[in-house]
Image 1 (tube, rainbow, N blue to C red):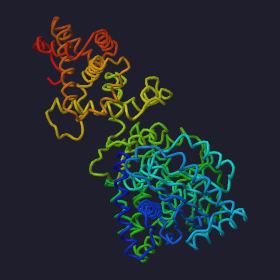
Image 2: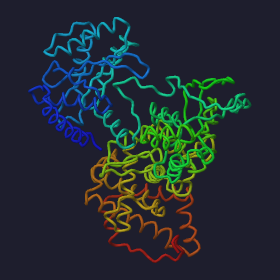
Image 3: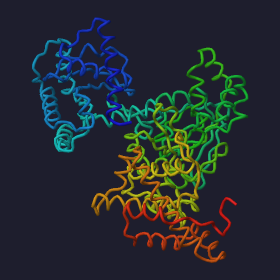
Image 4: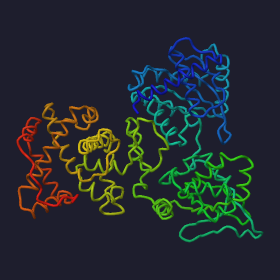
Length: 614
């Protein structure tokens, strides 16, 4: 999803907001730019879940295309916080551009004027009153958050100004810049993953940031209903009610699973069984369900009379499906149904006290039996995977770093799992089709755990999604031309094409560099720009035909049957053999004219060997 497309989506929403506001008799600015800035503020407030009527505190900004708002609200920890937001509208032609540095600097100046209590009186008395209240709040050592919002890209030239403001006023006053990329990414996370995003209009409480109170169910008079272990690691097993699960997820959402390697898989049959048992046979829930496993880094001791414990940095590492299903069922239940569930249902909670990340990952791996984990699942939270996914949001091909994380998607978006993308990238961009085909089990295995692990080879700081999607697009063209299915949405798993794809991309790059007389020609950028062009597809087909004829005639046909068979097998399995073929093509002086001439004069013979399909 490009910034321009996202801008169009938001712009349509703003028009609807303005129509509704006019119907409600709201006082709106007269100028179009300020009307849109006003609507953008309202949209932002709604998107981040502010349901109260804060719009009455909106006032026209210092220029013709901005609006300001000041309001206060309490956090979940009952702390009063003031929010000062300035939104600035820009035209769709600027959606791919960067902020004008003057706008950011002017906004920071406005914020400092408000802090100093020197804000010029406006026509909105409620806004002015809030500014006065803000100054008094700051004098009482209160917390405040300033936010600048615009539908342009971040401007690096203003980073020093932003950091200067933050340093000057921390820790009680903070500043956020919400650009179109950040808003778009959070929109995707919220709308299509249904996860709780970082809310710039709130002070989010993550499991690692705030203490979490868990109510424990106790039954026997001598309180021997908790199992405590103190061997390699301290651990406890106790019982909780559905209400505890509901409140836990209600407060933290999917953040409670962020150290889990996957979100609950929404289409799993096991989810349905959990819901059915809890609803129809709550008294049997404990017997049918394995419960959940959580890890806390905070030292915990549970007294013999304790009915609640306080945990720090709690993460659910196993039982995500159970948590998510209980939450959804409890949320939709009536008061009577909730009472019945809490009265009869019990959930086992296994709590482990550990800061040992490898051990925690092992626990996650070995306690998942209903939906076995893949090696790639353990990299869902890796920084590189996070970055690649965010980069993918700029395209119509989204990168799935965590299985099942996208619960819906726009009609024009395709989601590709990281296992598929890694294999194609390894073959096409890193030119290692043998590793892509034969060692897929090692693509998401670290060399720290296996000497043949390939994760660090495939994924580095230089790995970027533009190169990945170029590889994918070329592979898709290859598949379409091979199977003659122009409407295909996703490439089938035909690994036999990988070596030919690697070589044809190499030849394609040499021909295009010759055509444009550019020794530093960027093939991936060219692919991403022209992959839908008929001319480009014809060029790719031309080079692939050339590669196929060259390889067949030199290695499979012009030799005896035994050698041909050996060469054929090595072509798909022997890295050293394939490297020699790559070097052979590297040494060729090529152009589209030479390739076309060769294809027209040289024919392909019949293979005197058994192919992989025979």
